[in-house]
Amino acid sequence: MKSIYILLFLALTSCTSLKKNTNSNSSTEETKPTISKVIFLNYKVYKNPHQNIEFSFIDKIITEGNLKKNRYQEANSNSGDLICIQQDINSIAIDSIQIENPLIKNFEYADDSGKLNRKTIELDSTMLSIRMDLKPQTKFITLKLLSETNNSLLKIQL
Image (cartoon, rainbow, N blue to C red; front, side):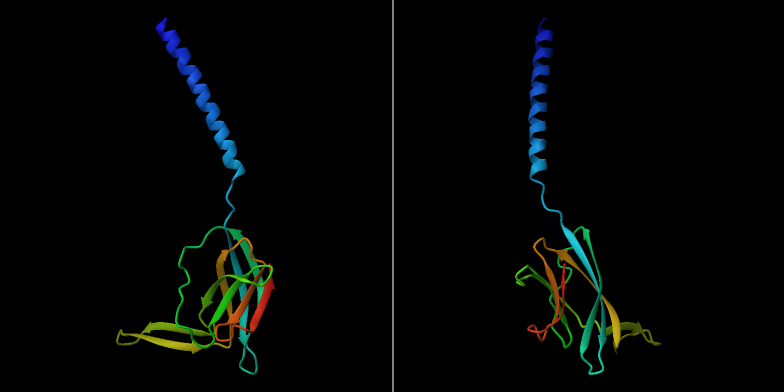
């Protein structure tokens, strides 16, 4: 007889805990966090006949995901370095990354004696791929020369 009461008590308590779990699951579905997105931007970078840097936009890809933190570290700025800025609807900066001059490439190689040497090559044109975490309020992405932040080289609308 005692075992029947114990089984009945356990059955009632297990049903009530199930009911609480289903209510908490439905409330978590209502408060889903926003999905993080990554944007990939591809540009063609080249020097015009006046030796000024110009860009042409190729394409963009937006996908779900996150980039590793501290991917782009602020470095000493050099001539030709760029800044890529995410802007909201009012063109106010939300986030930015600094990009080294894409037309200057540094190569390390081992010479005949086995020592490492560095060679710097200045290119006339190249492809530039940028990836960054896309903020939800971003409406524009602007590329500017770091030394001339008042003049934008290229601004695209998302």
